[in-house]
Length: 72
Image (cartoon, rainbow, N blue to C red):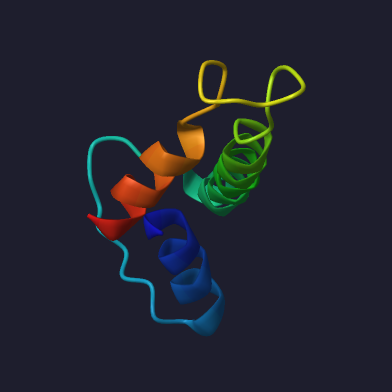
């Protein structure tokens, strides 16, 4: 969520520049987009089952973990 909000704020002109000792400069928005794409890819890929057929012994509980984190 923070990456998505940061990207939207940058493109709508609502982003505030907070100067500090370290900055990514013009690469900041590109790296935020890359991070968001990787996060979305990983969230989808990690939910895929590792073996078939799926039962309670080999179920992938990543969906439950992502759901709990999303609720927090």
